[in-house]
Image (cartoon, rainbow, N blue to C red; front, side):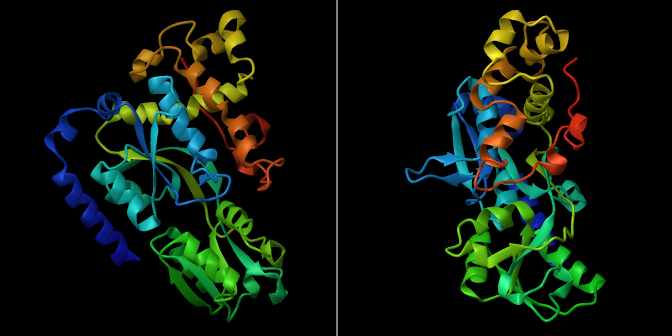
Length: 342
């Protein structure tokens, strides 16, 4: 794992040195505006988060976030170019300038913050690593996996978390590593391993793809903290702020009751000073981020507030049926908290 991190860090630093001079003198926002679209990195396909439909149109919680950023800049949520990326490629794609921003696919860790020349912006999904196991094993806990074979994806925090879990609980496991999530999932379904470990959201989502999904169960243990959110390159504070606050305003919109259905009316009629600042009818906070003052109106009109996006793609009324848990607003017992527009 250490060698992998060092190799990626070296490659990333080499790519940064090779960037053209324009990339170092022109801001990301300026280049994005000149291009006319946001280059957004995402997963290779996770139901509920980022997945193409039968016509090749990508949808999901992560895609909503990319569309929100495009709406803020261009007033056009479709002004995006999506780049599906594997775990081994996603950080390098951001470092090299192939993408402008990496959506919610990569856990915030100390080494990634310090070694790769990247900045994590803010948590938009609190997750944790778990296990998806065959029901035929007749186990009720991951601690009962002694002697089992476990599928895991290479180049992820999941490998180290799995090793730590086995050592802490003094169990012996056979690790079967794969380069992609798709390979790991298919291997579990085909019987090449007894269980698969990764983020619980990904386990729940990919289980839906299995022909006999009821033959598998997510075990109760959560063995790690996996704070997920968007990443950007270091050295461009304006872009960092815009990306981070695109999430924050969606959270604030939910807290203040601003929705797709009422955002236009509230822009005209609200007397609430917080809502007026959020929607740009009072003061000029959008200009601070290099966008128009109605940028939040554009975002909410395009994809809704944070809760609307979550419920549409991940919530109880979807096939995924995820409970918000820590992803509830702080005022409702969760950890979602955003600074105020002020």
